[in-house]
Length: 113
Length: 112
Image (tube, rainbow over all chains, first blue to last red; front, side, top):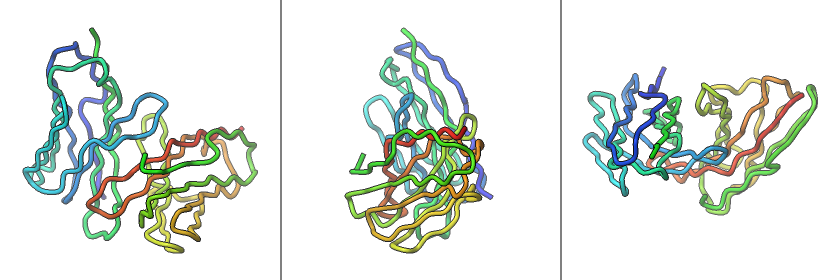
């Protein structure tokens, strides 16, 4: 059974600082997704990582995937208040033709001045 | 949002009544999903569809049924609503396993 963990679950950081959110999963997977959710809103896709060593960057966010370690990271550079949200990783199940994924519990990020 | 709408957006119902939630997409995505989101549980898959009239169960399917008679519509039915089904329900759609899932705005359901 695929299990997905995120660390930390809650993160309060100051503007301008850097930090990393970790996503660990328990079995082999070939794809991983990062989503953002603002309070009371839907989920917004951030990144799709499809291979070992994949790295993607968008603005102050950079995501990477290490399939051998079963680990993905979401690195935040020089945080700003607008990045306050909950971030979910989701891991795709192998041997499925459809996009079935298991979501992590989410990391609630609060960026304070 | 890739053209995904959900209706209703909010609903209050009583225990024991049937409830149907509708998801509509305009992008001709093959795969569609229903999730529920509860505090402390993240998102959990209820049912999914991999084509018209092709559906299967997810992690938490008990008490729910689905139907997909057209590519664009995916219906979720709570056959006899219970208070434990109070939740926020999200519909999602994707074009395939290497593509992201696009989520609808969500439906807040309260079962009294």
